[in-house]
Image (tube, rainbow, N blue to C red; front, side, top):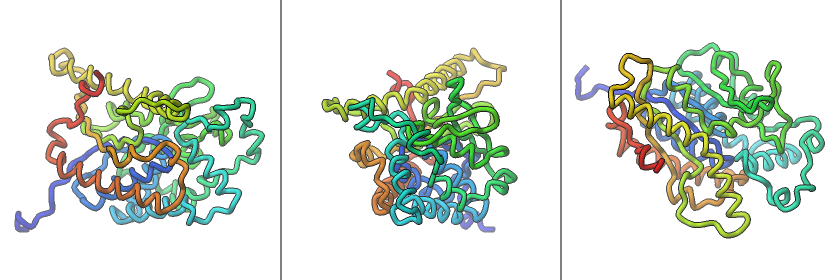
Length: 343
């Protein structure tokens, strides 16, 4: 083959996908840009909540039909959970609540104003109806996904009893494990897996990065961020204060992992970890910037497909911009300056 006509070299990366309700459609757009470009080979994906949904749907679509299969599968998922989907009115009401609470620290206004009004899902949803489960079951072939080996999955959930993070991996992954990662305790009963019960993974890792350190040989991690770490404006209203408090808390575990990555990198640069199993991770970031930050937290419960498509477009542009500006750096150097972020 003529070298000039040979396909572009592919670079292996790990993806880390945040949760964030309907704003997860931004991540759909980023993934679509990566798939359409074709120069990235995904070795592993870590995801929590909506990020876990995107991760599993992406992986199963890729298994079944390659890049185009993954693109189609992601669109089917977001169409399925939209107002244009096939949910009945009862399912839609529950799913709207789910979207509104998919940030697992977001407290509904009525609950924040009147704690006595809170009703446990064991009372309000005794049959534990979960319309998201129905959508995923129609799309994802879990036995085939478990048997595949094209990429690794790290799906985080929070153990109710211990309060610790738990990572479910592709070879064991079931629908229950995925639902555990997106189980909002204000909307759904805790999900039982084995002898333990789990809530949303975003409490303890949004998303978890530590599995990449020892379970893949890839040193580049692309974080697709939905929840902003920094905001310029100071919140004043009660709703703005709660939303910003939620964003800060929701990113706490992620920032702790950033500190660990930065600390290890500095030790490696100083030659103090020579001969150990530690490796220097190269971090990269895809974010929506002002275009995504312009949508308030309240829009996380907007299930209109046109809204999903608007977020998709922002994500698609962000993914294309990232590749144009940083593809050459992958495998060479990180493009997310952790020390500046952590100051």
